[in-house]
Image (cartoon, rainbow, N blue to C red; front, side, top):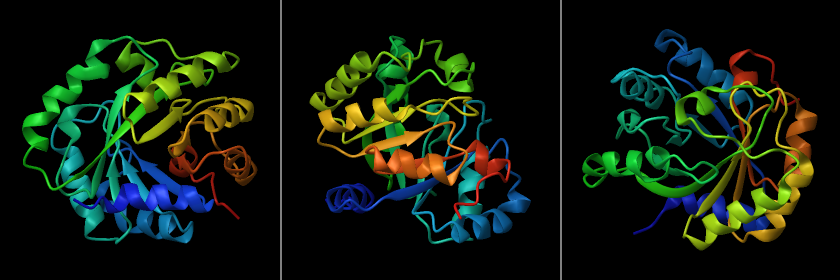
Length: 238
């Protein structure tokens, strides 16, 4: 079975081509604004739209993604904070395991709860190792997952966690500083993780400028995710 989204990311990584995803939280975006939001995303030439949030009510994600699909051909990938946010209206799903935490709910329990839906789903499912890095703020992910992020200076632990994820069969590693992070994932940490894995690397959280974006790319990020800065209309990539 072909996996077009994963293949696209893997191919770009091998060629050194850099990808951009815009993260939308259905809780923070009105369906009435979607056509305007899509125009902004297309202006940025984003490769993907990620959709997800920590506190989204049942049914909201499905209607939000359905409306998105009606307004754009950009691939939509679910980045769910809870199994209830899974919907067939999207193109794919980051099947996340929170490797940096030790809460079984986000290592395996949420994944098991999603299985009855996913068994009959049309979604492309992408196994992803999710690693929280301390972004200097008590982000929604930390509150929900009740886990401790890896300190920015503990590069050895971040690298070991990423490599363990790769050995466990994850197809992507996602370094996340958290929504609204005061501090993005530092470039040395990105660089060291990238040197030690052979799968594509996603980086998100706290990136507010083109300079930060380009530095993340330069240090090994294959795909960068912009969320809060886009929501606040503070990111133009010019």
